[in-house]
Amino acid sequence: MSYIIDRRLNGKHKSAVNRQRFLQRYRRHIREAVNDAVGKRSIKEMEQGERIVIPRKDISEPNFHHGPGGQRNIVHPGNREFQQGDRIKRPSGGGGQGSGSGQASDSGEGEDDFAFEIDPQEFLNFLFEDLALPNLVKRHLEGTRTFQIRHGGIVSHGMPAKINIVRSMRQASMRRRALTAASRRKLRELEAERETLLQQDQSPQRQARLAELDEHIERLRRRIDRIPFIDTVDLRYNHHIKVPVPVSRAVMFCIMDVSGSMNQDMKDLAKRFFLLLYLFLQRNYQHTEVVFIRHHTSAKEVDEEEFFYSRETGGTIVSSALKLARDIIKERYPVEEWNIYGAQASDGDNWNDDSPGCAELLEKELLPRMQHFSYVEVMPRAHQALWDQYEGIMDRHPDVFSMAQIDDPADIYPVFRQLFHKRMEAA
Image (cartoon, rainbow, N blue to C red; front, side):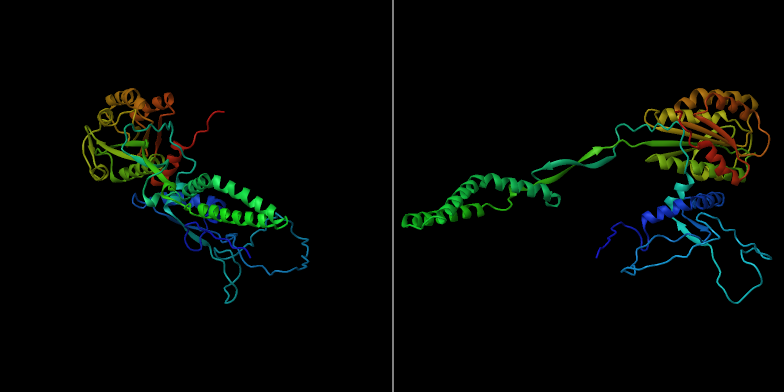
């Protein structure tokens, strides 16, 4: 009888391999459910799992069971109507919206849809599938204080908890062989001589020699047995050292117009886009920081609460926010140590004389320091001067700059996928 022991740390009645096969089989249904969930969730709900509903067909997972045993002869009848691989059409129903037909009945069995849960990690995997950050370099932090414990070899002194049993037993075996090599060699010679004497006639001289050999052999065996099986000099210990590990880290600049023309609905659209970008960065970097910059005629660095929910009145000068982002980068985020990303959300309004200066500032001051900069316009209307100026930048720098328009929450995720879809490398 064979036993299969699964030592993986999975939940009850769950198999990691079978679950991955199941998710792969119904990838299309899951991705559609994930895409629908993105437009309905708030920021706090984005990193949660999701309930997936799919048609109940071919959903059983493989399992082990006892067979009938023995030998059997089975005759399977043929099928004249269908061949392997044929698709059987669903019976056409009438009246209601269900898959059945005819009137209600008190007999028969129905077929329900199959529903299951995916965990937050699986949800994010499907959410960001086929996406990649453009110009991803992952600069590393120099002089980091992050350390990782690694194996540093074998030493002869250490803590009892770190004893290396295999190396200790190997060392003990080598010590015993070295200390008893001469005695074992002499023992083999004496035993060979004794066997030779036993095969000859037993004269008084040979019997005396046998007695002498037996005594000598016994002394050698006692000497060998006195060698301890393991000694303190044999103990070997695992040695662990702390190695500094470079940590890839990124900073995300969220720039948003909070002038009187930006209502709360527009801010919510921007908020969802910023959230997706932040979650995406977290999956690619070990450490991620966020800098919130709000602006009207002047710019200010604020916290998240004030960034999304505070309203201002007056006009709009976008260049003030871009200048503040440039100054913060110079002061706190050296380009050789940080991966810098920027995201700007606006309704498109800007003082006309300021738009050319914004384009020049963005192209000459910010883009050379950044991995990527995204601009989203959250106003369903004709584009203005700022959009026209940014279009020229996108034509000249398509790898580090992208822009799109978002009209309603349903457009956020498609636009995000469009901006960060994986670019196929040229062969």
